[in-house]
Image 1 (spheres, rainbow, N blue to C red):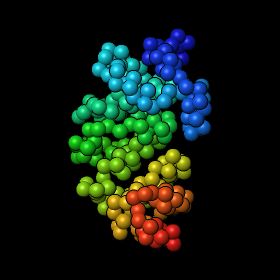
Image 2 (cartoon, helix red, strand yellow; image 1 turned 180 degrees about the horizontal axis):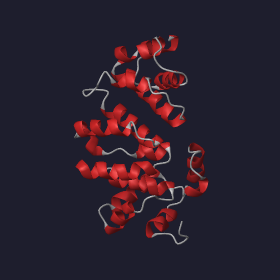
Image 3 (cartoon, one colour; image 1 turned 90 degrees about the vertical axis):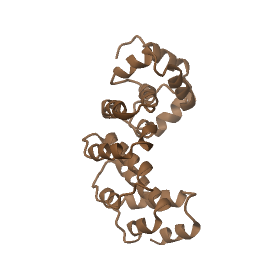
Length: 226
């Protein structure tokens, strides 16, 4: 890394919060502390909004890989408003450089709600990526956009069959199955009661579902007994 900070890095350091840096470092053991500046998310989102569509942002988006965690999150916020093929091209360029769950989960493109056909096609491809957080991103998109009107009954068994030893992938599968009963309780219940989920995913999914405010106490009681 060049020791001379870029204009964007200089601005990010001007927003540094040491207490928040310590908090973030504890949450992300996979990211070296020296790569975390400590910028709170609202400030980072505001900065992204301020530089959006400027030459500064355009050049920044070409400068992959980034060094700092906040640079990656800034990148995620800047491309979240992209649409169509420009969005998918930007995602394919960026996703292989995502190295933690927080950046992965911060990437929420608005366009996904508009074109689920294109999203589904890309999800199928991302599922088979060699990169952990590209696969996690695909699973999260499936959870966020395909549990209701666009639900495919083949999705839950597909996810349940994944044999991964990666903790952050296991956690995402568990999150899917914790969220799924809130939308499709009867269809998903057998994954807990049979059970059709592997340990430790079953344990994580059950706990997360029991913590949810979207399920009734009666529904939670069934999950507790499963």
